[in-house]
Image (tube, rainbow, N blue to C red; front, side, top):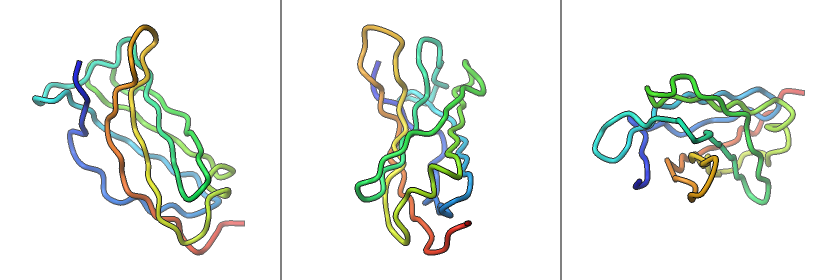
Length: 115
């Protein structure tokens, strides 16, 4: 299976430190068919500077190719202020295969933080 792609590109994500951040996304196989999540787990990682956090991901529609990723307030609070980074989305297989890259999405953290 080749790499995957977002059905609709995600805009730059602005993350307020100390606030929950949720991302919903729809994945297609190259060629336009919905990705079937059977045998795969969605994974989302935020990398900003030297900080990397992995969100809690869930499949919304297995055959429809949709998933969500949630980053908790405690996780976003660890990110450096007023910085650029990347949200990395991929499908992690349950066995005998390599991860399937979906997308890298730009993120920006706010200067402000929710205490």
